[in-house]
Image (tube, rainbow, N blue to C red; front, top):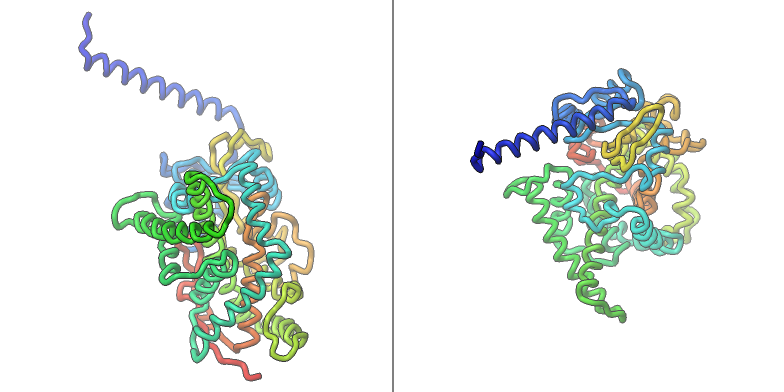
Length: 463
């Protein structure tokens, strides 16, 4: 019997389909022999993604998505998100196990849009030794000597901002003001790069697409973000080239270009990590102080004491001054516990993981959440109440995760801390203030932010 080419093609295609079905069945059969965490996968491919997104948009991911599944399945459960089977873990022990085994059992797993916009040469995409090397370079600029140099620079920039943007005003959008400041601090104080007109707006467009669907169609959010990323890249590459002119060491053109792209990618990531998250942390700290006047008055005494230790006319702070802001940092940490700047983050299993009697198969995603410990009475008594003094006591490792944990703990943690403490000092010592919308809701897009920008009424203090 002779077969036509079309017939042969159909036979071949049918054979391939059967092979694929067999391999998938075999893989599923092999997985089914292991004890997977309990849970529900939802619809094919879509899984429970829509429920996840709806809860995220309402800023109720923990209450509406995670907590009901913990109640039904326990602290570790299976779901299906964004095309991947996903295990969600909760609790300090799970956080420690997962985050301390970075590069050994799991690796960071960011969405495709995030990788494209932050850059494949950023530290978030580096693994193992290269990650440690890049982290060491970032950490060296934020060591003791680097921080001592940074503090007066941040102070001067903040005083300039208050003198030019706040003076003569009676109402300020606190969230927007802190975004402008944190952006300027990263560029001018840390990197020595002058902020050019509309750089902030361009960066904002990049950040808007970080968690968008990676659809590069004209007019889409991701398309706008990619376009803004190219604009930022042009600006930063020019700045890096100018700085390299002052270096005596010469390099080959391709090495120079590769090095510049790595710098650009990590600057974009640094702005992303420090920008919205620090601004949100400051806004929530002010919200908590407004709702708890006793804490505000206690915090004010701490800063009045620092001012009394200064010589007349000396308004600048030192690194030691920030170390003496112990209660202020307790207030900030408690605010971040109640209102985490990040919900958590995804990892991908690079081997089969045995944990708590369950198997997390290689290739599956794993999601840890801040809320899974921040609102757990096992670690924080009466977790829904605002109580800064709880941070006077020992907090169990991996229970407070506002800055993540393990090898990928936020590299800019010390910079964020300085921004928060120094900003708090200048505002509470210079202004009386109150919230215009005490019950302002929190929105998500995709990171949390005060829906109205946290407007505050300000009145200069008389000295």
